[in-house]
Length: 470
Image 1 (cartoon, one colour):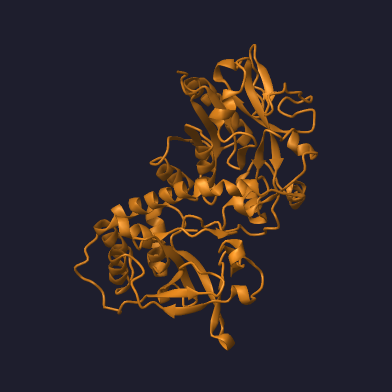
Image 2 (cartoon, helix red, strand yellow; image 1 turned 135 degrees about the vertical axis):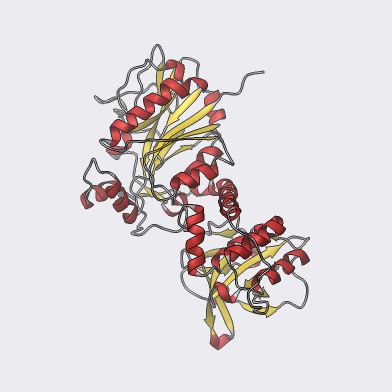
């Protein structure tokens, strides 16, 4: 029996709160065994998120104490430290940035990819595939692999840059740059296992990239807001609008990275739950002095549409917003299960928030995605009863009516917990109290309960979490 190859990825990061979980989940899903992270002075909660993620995966977190001077020099120091002190414990180590996502075209995971790499190969270089802003000025609420779906062509010169996976034993011990590592008696190949041909600068290929087997999805631009934040962080360089225009290339559309999200999202949800549990542990859960009774402030409705025959429901909690509902469906036991909605990234949410758009003349409503502002469409039976969050305008397929349920919809334990929580003002203390009593049921309700916290309680929760709630 062959020993399983140990695979690690090393990175230096700073202030990546909005995207770091997607990056971590991406490489975990790709089959990396260990993530080696060096934090370069984050102040937005990135470090705390990584610590919470480390409870759910093998992540080694290091802190760079001195952020003075050139970022490139700090990156060199980090990579050399990893190569000398950590890499020897692994068979393959990749060196990537937090905006670089390795995508394999022909293999499901890295283990399968490296199984076909000949023994005389010491390093594999993957060319960049630079992604643009996809028209985003502000940071999108959706994950970056979902929001940024347009990239440059292979002919763009910048895509000749590579990033590397190296066999540590093949490294010569010399340093050139962060893209290229000198080897001793080994071949340097591309993703298709052809020998690399370098330009005058090692780390930059002399030919147009071959993306047929793999590439680095390089989200260098992201939104204009991302770029401005990056410009503020990089004290060693001056970035201008012209720099943004150069990298903001959006010639080609790519859907495949979005397909990875369904595998990543459940793990991210697990990490987020870990963050909340950690925050709640520090609270005093004395519920003896309950606040005034408010009546049970929630309703459950059946959503009716002439084309959609599956059971679909709406949980209405006025304190979450008069125009908000949480749509859901249940299994045979009455427990909410994720709804598959085309073009909606919230693939593992049991309760999916939508905005109610009233159509008074017809006594109906439309349901608008609060992130994309597209309308929920119930496609006809020939489309296999599919829900799609894709319509820009409201027509008959986007109109729904609600009717009160005269039968039990959800499991009695979950219904009683909803009554308990929403019969009193929702506070951090009450959420923590009910979570400790029934964590299984609170798993479903927690995202909704957090949304109805008053502003001062939300601010306190963010202090306990160590980062902003997006």
